[in-house]
Image 1 (cartoon, rainbow, N blue to C red):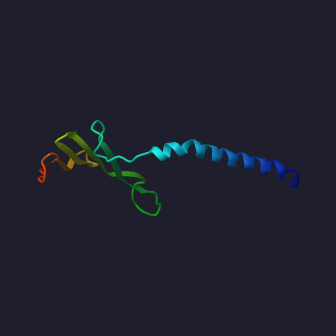
Image 2: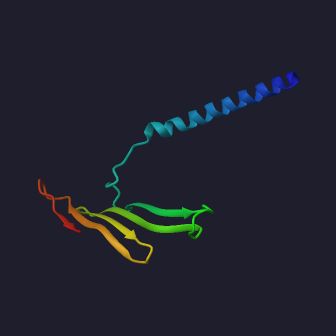
Length: 119
């Protein structure tokens, strides 16, 4: 084990050197990175999805094994134009129905007044 110690030490030194080199290459990109508001991009809406599943695998329960779908929800937030912002939460249920839980638009251009239309 002792005769491999110099080789092991060399590997550690090379890994540390590679990590430092990568950090130096990425540092300028991190220094110039800026966060943007989710409402600032007119062409791309903010899209999110979550789903709820239930699973059954216990052998002592009299129920079918497997994975069951309970619901899925898609959330969309988009700047429609300079005057309106669209927000929607659409729910998909296991029986095949689609329920628009929230769908509304909000005015963004009228000073001191904000109109909100929808469900």
